[in-house]
Image (cartoon, rainbow, N blue to C red; front, side, top):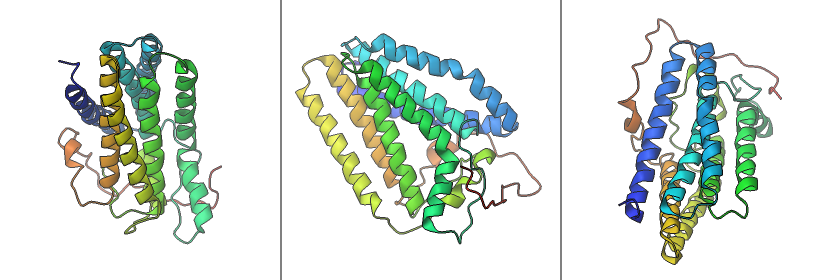
Length: 274
């Protein structure tokens, strides 16, 4: 049954939904207990990253259906731990200050980069590491899965910076309360059509590879990639369409911690943190 590309696409859909919800639940759980608890949780979860690295190594020479799934899951494990480290505030960037409204655009970009610099460099280093190991290997689905997630994330962050109609900050923890000040609300920006076109083209390429594949392992691998890229495309549309996407995960998260006053970080700083 797992040989069917439609089943593979459903597996990718479920893993996208479940892994996102699991990470958000962990982050909310840690957020209610303070920043230090989030750091401890991130360190305790580091074996997940090691397991992902092992999965990339283990599946690199496999060409069957199982190897395709292993590589895909390994890439998600690597990505999931790094995202957890970011959302708990453990690995972010040197800038933790709210961005003022009156600063020039170039400075706003530098400040925004400063909020996520260490995290983005870790993602890039992981992507390069996977490429170096799997270059020339039989199974590169782990690399391509991580690459799709990486470039889709870069595209999404740039669109948030340039401005989109809908910005969902509901799931941001207290450690990242300064991030929304670096985003911008706008009807549209010049990058969004390019992002949609690129992601749509990538989905079409993966679909073409499914029909051109000569082994069942390749069929499943490209089906997983097509589904994950389509979900990245959908996440981009969530930034402009009035759809309640937050309801996909809100029901599975713990209730917000009751507070007597607004504890949102509001301090500003002249330095951009770099």
